[in-house]
Length: 296
Image (cartoon, rainbow, N blue to C red; front, side):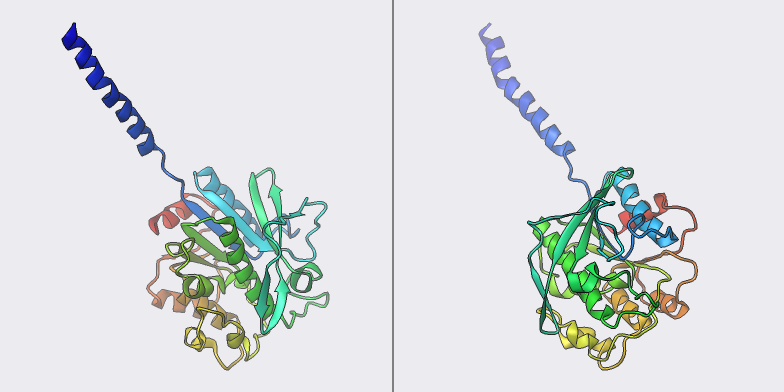
């Protein structure tokens, strides 16, 4: 009887410890993906292929076990009441300085109930709230689209920092998100939230026509971003192709989302020796998951 009691007393703690360790082994944190998009359906009413893709990808990755966060600009033609947007006070209130001028950052949020995804909106009265899209009522591109582009990229990054959320993958879709790779790699490269993130540049067919001004490269400079980092676009007007080349330089991989993207830009990507996912005609499927997972 004595031997039996000793035997039981000795082994019960070991069995309990084994069960606890097994549970810890099974508790693995899900991968996280951040989508920085220029346009998403249904917040911009016209149902274009890119807007639908930017809605479907977060849904696909979330259904596959990823945690997701999705951002877009809060353009003036987004109906806040109909789409049930509301401001997130704890994330708003920061000022971003661009060309020596302070611009208040407002963060709003809404949900696409049918897709079970949440969208964060970057807003500012001057850059977004009072203006629709990237062109005025006459179809003319806004002269400060360069600063809107800067504000959007920096606004997303600062908001993700406030959320204290660490993405494994960051996808940038649309030229208005094209500065995020530069800032993530240079200004925020040592931040614990981003230092191990893989950046995927999604190249669409959404070229802008009016080049950004010759002072654009200077406007990009903040702590961590030096003139040498933007020398490829310094001192001359910056068109769509030049902006996207800069984005390619600071990205880890590239996805082509449309069949008719800029051919010179496509050639540049091919010579960059970065992982490339060619255009897929079907709706988002496992090809996206396989490609993104291969980067981890």
